[in-house]
Length: 334
Image (cartoon, rainbow, N blue to C red; front, top):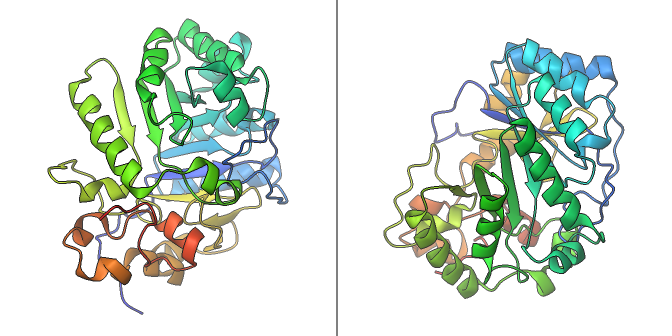
């Protein structure tokens, strides 16, 4: 087995933690809505925190599922803070009123992200398959602003919003949002089933990123972030990332509700178990992670001058559509 070509951190910078796959929404693009899993007990979740603290993982981000459906969320987050970890979370906003915002701040959350995919209520509600979702999400942002807890806004770029993403930025400004994440569309779970309807063509992705990067470069009041390694193939792109290609398996890992570790939420391959296996052995020598960190240049990547920058694009998307980490990202326009 070859060793990873990157110089690894001693542990991930972030663990994306799904406490439960339970959710009150049924979004068209969701990777996890049809997942089922046992859930760790409160005591076991505390032991997870102990492991992460021992490994000096600095950040945990609660996702899901909807984190606010978990009765243990506040207890686990408070315990994480007591152990020196920095918790954040992503929510659909439905359950996040002012009292919840106060409680999140009191237990020590560093930031809370709210999903909003359009500045038009009907489009967001339809995308999230939940009437009233837009109003509840905006109210959640306002509650976070009122209590002084840092908020972020997450929008999944798709056919419903790629031409109107500036409106999402304006919505963020109106509600005191510090950072907007323009997420690339993944092809996992329901995202795979609905990709023909919702996903962009490679040339549309190229046009979107050229425009969005130009907007980012002229914007000073909001931090605009992307999570798509395929951008690196654009001429003149000069973002200094900690790693090239996908960050999953290099800077971050995903924790399922039952304690199993996967490279990310969009790659359903189990690396090991957080409470049963030696973490450093998994982190350094897992065959799955090693393979992800040493992607081959297959297909059109083989003679592409951009491969060293993007490393084939999004590993999760390539795996979801081909079953092979090293196949080219289907979003790639080169």
